[in-house]
Length: 328
Length: 300
Image (cartoon, rainbow over all chains, first blue to last red; front, side, top):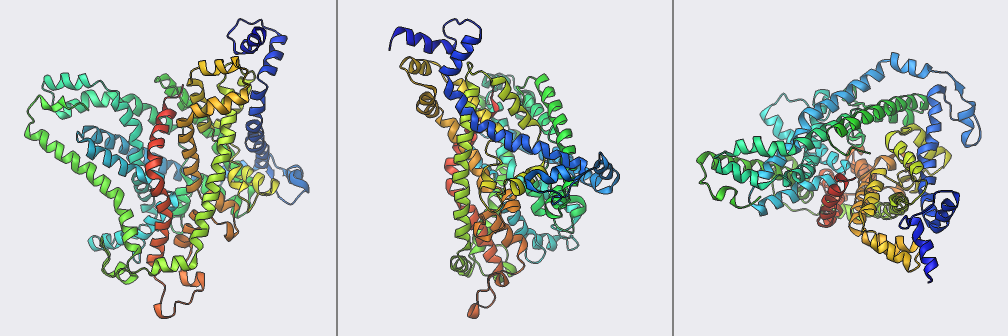
């Protein structure tokens, strides 16, 4: 290969100094033609599966009827436009507020009871000096993260069902008046939290343990020499070491306040606990996919997307203020 | 944790006590994690009578293989496992193709049009049309119902995973690429022969993220796949545990001398079948997943 060709190949990479202008542009296009081929599948994917559905949001402003027109898009054109009627109906009816209340109740409970669980476990694991014990425990507690919600749900179902669930029988022996866990509305959120804790506490420790690993060991050494006890060391060295991570995780959680894991909830939902178990996604699924009221589900989804986006943007800029690189 | 932490100072009785408490707490959490697995495994070999009369055991008094005999005779579970395997393997391949091809150009500083494509990625991250428009697109417009394309295409790129790969590409040293350019290689050759092999650890982590999520999810299959022949294992488990009142009425197998089918142990054994594949690959998964979580959290 001649010297001239080498120079031409190098130029687009910005190694040699280049002149700005259309000729550079064209040269870069031809030198890196493959890169423009590479992005084609990704762009087509986004156009079809991200941007095309956005046009479907028009249903939120229509009384959409799927059979009103022919061809794939006919129904979207021929359905009657009703302005904000769907939203008005939504906000004036009881369902929307019930779903919003349930979603917030689940997420706030999770924030209070489930969010601290991995932090506590990480702090405890950090105190363990026997490496074999520590590693074995970690290996065990990470397992449930990889187990599907269907399996978690089916284990719950088999341990807690009223006829022959092993734990339900145990509970009944101690508290004979205990209502059935799987169908009592009051037990629904504790049950979800229990499942989440069992499934995700262990795996959730990873990020905190990583933060703890970067705490300078000399600090502990110095504190020990100064006569600090275990508690004082945890409070003054360990905890400050992960407080940044905790704040970031908390803020990112706040950005997800309208999201609940619907795979989990949909499984544990039944006609007896529906008053507390209906959240956005399960309600949209039932109303639209099952019952065919597409406009209602679209409007609800649009509300959730808009508010969700604002929450994510807000929490993300907040987390950047705390020194994190943020989500994007 | 360095060994000298407590070695220099004599431990106080309080400290020893705290130490014991910590071991007990952590140990019992590990035990609580394991017990449900022990229960479904031990229970799947028990008779239904024992499961009801003597619910707490590590080893059943009467070991019965009836549940497994039923599952093997019936054979549905193997179809479910096979279907899930197909969904997972092909799905992950599609994910990786779409994700790496998008991530690579975005990771190159000299790629023009990066800003525009980034804007598209950001929109996908922040705003979704929601369940209904996506459902109508897949089911009514693309007509993918009862094909696995309905499970493969809508989530072909998870933008978070794509960004992990992109950041990894970015972090690779430039010298290899530059010398390849000198030798006359084009971007396709550099991508497939240098960049992908160099990124093996990140690609392994992300593939596992995708694979586990394909294997475990059921919502897509519930919405789009109604044909029993294409049922994946999660859907099958859900049907047997949550929806089926009586297994005998479901299958029409004559239980004759055996009497009633061992409903409870069949349910437990079916759960065992769904758990085992994950446990088999777990040692492999654990390493790359933890690594992947770290890669994801120190993104630039």
